[in-house]
Length: 415
Image (spheres, rainbow, N blue to C red):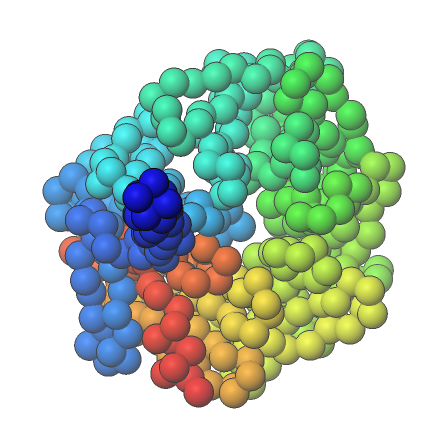
């Protein structure tokens, strides 16, 4: 009898553990949250999910494309929000956090810089110039702010800090942050200084200084000794002189401590909006040419130095490559570009050379003589290890929506 009872208990316990394990391993689909509502593109038929927050005509924007807006488990989504839209009068820009398990949204206050999202550990780090320091928020307790360190005196003593980082990136151990600072000296001169800030003790390790505007800095995801930076105003007088002397458009630079090296865009001799691959072995950017088939997303393999075209999308502006390198998402201004002009977003399958529009051409968000001040570019990027794409969709009534688009349908449509 005892043996029978033991067997029954063992069977029941095994069944319970098995069901618990299955429940934990069940794949979470973030679009199942009640915070999303379905959108079907009328031309391509692609299904996306629009995030609901505030009133329907409020603005909801994804983060800048270099920063992944969603955690790897799909639970947390960071985004930007303004009450109202620019045609009716928008309020201040706030950073928000959606908990898609709890169907709850937290307002994290007025936004000052693009934070670093730790997508596996579910927290973010950011700097605040006005409060003179760097801070952290755990997404499981997002209303609590943790002070990490002050802005280093080596920088603040030089003058007024105008920028700490264009979009923050951290070392692999998450203990240091790469800064591409801009400091206005008492004499009225801007200084552009790059380096690593130790977030634990506030110590500063200077890497170098440029005479030109050095921004869009981003550490290599797998090599803390190098960062990818941009000569943002390379089209101006100083950049033109450099190109006349060297023959190269000086947009992209590898910056290390004590040195910097130009990455020439050899095919087009023009580059914009560069971004590291997730594995740190290469980087991609958008190039524009005179012919339609010259407009591409280009890719550089760091080890071989080989540059290749990864996606042929005329007028490409920002791109993101899937972790396995098979797919590319890119936004495109199909006509003349301006802040708030027409946009559309494409998914490119490198294995087949086919593409589909995640959403097709939208009428302008704002007229050209009254352009948007909210940086409304779509900024598409892969999240959740390439399973989804996040982008911003513009509407002609002046509001923006954040789109979450499952990738499996895009692969099927481009086979």
